[in-house]
Amino acid sequence: MKSVDCNTWHVPVLLDTVIDYLSIEPNGLYIDLTVGGGGHSTAILERLEEGGRLLAADRDPVALTVSSERLKSVETKAAFDMIQAKFSEFPSWLAEDDIGHIDGLLADLGVSSYQLDASERGFSYLHDGPLDMRMNPDQKETAADLIAKLRESDLIALLRLYGEEQYAYLIAKAIVERRDKTPITTTGELADIIVSAVPSHARRGGNPARRTFQALRMAVNHEQEELSYLLQVLPEVMAPNGRVAIISFHSLEDRMVKQAMRRWESPCDCPRDFPVCVCGKKPLGRSITTRPIMANEAECERNRRARSAKLRVFEFGEVDV
Ligand SMILES: C[S@@+](CC[C@H](N)C(=O)[O-])C[C@H]1O[C@@H](n2cnc3c(N)ncnc32)[C@H](O)[C@@H]1O
Image (cartoon, rainbow, N blue to C red; front, side):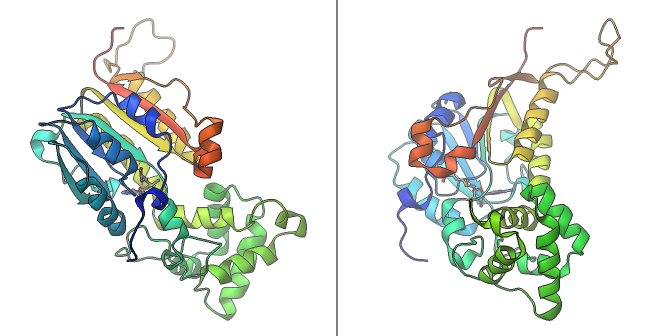
């Protein structure tokens, strides 16, 4: 790996806002499930003191190497640990005593700028490289494998669901025609196929390959399933008053987060016409953000990724009803 400048590796979005909302206790236990380049984790660790702990995880081994160097340079008496794991492996790596004692947890979804820009990782339609897109290179299936095996109808559905791609039919058809002659193995080939498949007016605005690449990345890494799993386990692991902050970049993911937080806030499933609750399900806490928090104009100017970021925060614990 080349030497790394953490400041350009990935610029964390909504950094100060996330830190404010996490309302950090200096001796608390904090978990960053998406450490990436370590921007958010560094800011958390800087606010911890002796007795405080940060557990920083990511499924990408390169992210862990880069961010652990960065975290080591923070002057603090607090402890930190790095864990290579995906959401669906959480909380198996957590000590039993820590379950129910997490004071704050962050999930900053999607990919880092490094992952997107490094041609060898195969996420980018702008830089030619192997058609890979695995956040963890030990995972078996690459984007090339997926493209080779999906039925045309499944490819169309995937591009529509994860890519919100209006030319899904044309793109899927072009992919299938090409792969029947020769396998598609590079990001450059795929980007060219997409550009040729869409109508000429669709080539004007942004790059027409963007949505297909996003959809494939989400499918290769099972991003929706991972988030769904995480949202199920969070209520079991957080401390009373513990706060969960989730940043999403896709409307589907923001909807999943919003709906989970609503369920946590109002779990009662009694029929609407029941005069009183008989199911006995009590609120697990309260949403701190009624609407998603978005980056201001200045941040969006500095960091293009911030434009689609949506932050939602939930505080677990008893609520007065
Ligand atoms: C947007 S970046 C995080 C950036 C980070 N907050 C920072 O300040 O640099 C997202 C990171 O989450 C990781 N990631 C995405 N989905 C994951 C999952 N299901 N499990 C573990 N890590 C995941 C990616 O590998 C990537 O490094």
